[in-house]
Length: 102
Image (tube, rainbow, N blue to C red):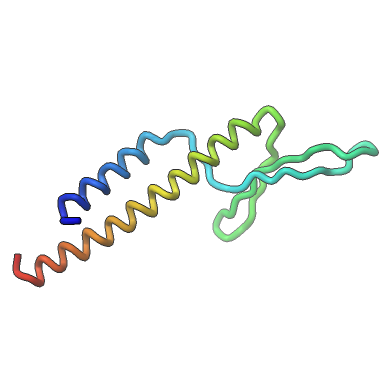
């Protein structure tokens, strides 16, 4: 790809990222815990914040919305990685152009 194509691809990724709303990062953990003499489902969101694991309780009514947000978060991570890769390629292309005297 030439410089213009790389910049257009990066802009496209950034636009997609800006349009992606309501995303979250982390892992939804679904397990059981003993309560009142029986086992009951227990769900929580696990996230690493500044190197420390943080958990947030997730009620049954919140599970599907959280799953959707986590899917969007995975899409956001992929887009960020693409933006980073394209930025590196743009920098290399610009540097090469200067070295070639263009």
